[in-house]
Length: 335
Image (tube, rainbow, N blue to C red; front, side, top):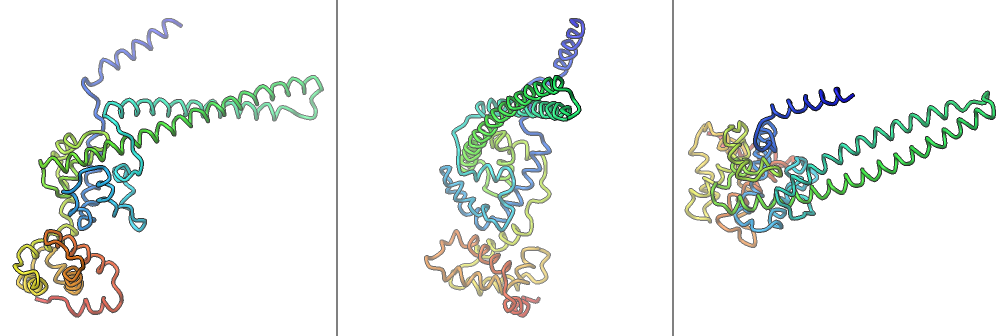
């Protein structure tokens, strides 16, 4: 027996000696880049709502306010684990060390719950076996023996159920505590990134910084994500926003913006740009978006015009009436 133990100990020692030295990786590259790619899509899709508010993020409540558009029940924006983390209503101040210790503790509890579940399963099977053994043809003495076994095994099952319930309760409490700590850490890192002024606040840069949350800080996340290009960056939504921004910035007078926009789009001819061609095709929706924003009360600040126009444009385009669809076909800018 001692020899067996020595062999097992020796095998573990060899495995330990072959492990990589240094700090273990908190999140692997595949998961990191996958999270980044999803966040790029998420930020680009909601950029008209989210983008203009980012420079004013100063405290955790600001993060919740800026990202409130992700909470809609009509989309899947709030289903990703990072989005859930940033949007969590409750939080507990946490340091990276505390998060690591709590994750390790949760891992131990997860294993304890699995072990308790296995013990509970075996106790239930043992009790069922004893219950099946209690047959009418048994003698009175045999029945007493079996009934004693049933009583003992029933108590063992009750004890196993209680232990499973106790460990499950600890597991749930620790998991909730960890999620609160991760929410606090993630929002804190988001704030630090926005205030750092080291990167332009673009969907790709933000996604690079947030992809590692809540396992690594924004600096490490951004550094690692920059090594891997993001094929989905600058998608259709962002190209349309950038086109609107260019049009607004090229105008000289706010009162002539609608006329200037139409002239700008017509001057581009058969543009290869997706943003230009889409807005030429959807001139009806863009025209009404411009009119609505320019006539808004209170007045929309000039710096916010691209965001407000793009938001209004998408709302009108994604929820058109049958009549508006007909008008949109008639008003296309054909060059």
